[in-house]
Length: 96
Length: 167
Image (tube, rainbow over all chains, first blue to last red; front, side, top):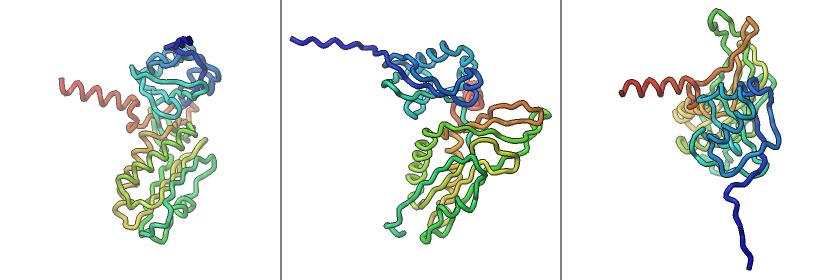
């Protein structure tokens, strides 16, 4: 008999990109191999990044994330991450 | 409308100065009687006694491509007669007076093109992952926030004052 045990929370590694003000706050543009769990709420994902770079908290309320190039607001929504996924910190836009 | 003409959506991020003619040529079509154009230029603003000498642009390039495609999809859903769309956007240093963005839309008749270009400018400012930093003659700088962006501080303030009005 084969018993399958599913971990409801997986640990994996994503790549995090920083832009604009968040580069100035963290001192980095890109981080490889950032450990995350999945699924994770966007609030917890943000919290994880603030833990790595406390000065990011200055962006509180004026930031969203992008996961696999889709905007995700910081809140309760659950985000599913895959190994090697691209996550970005997105301060308020000012294109054009 | 010639159904065999493939509709084009062209997006370019450039560290070089932008050519308006290149953008116009990209959307030109014998089926189109109108090319609607928008050129965003860097303004010499005065902020708290400091003068803007230029803008520094950066972008999440991969995502700018996908957001551009969504923008075009939205335009074409609203104005099906829109034929070609071309947007060129600067990256890097843009001096006062230079073009930061050039957008052109071709359409058989002018009404749809004119409507579409206005909407495109608003949507670009609301959704394209591009950021600009104002650089002043005092050598300091500040990151700008588009009012169109839902997570800008202006949006927060607007939402807050709306809530306060209804209380």
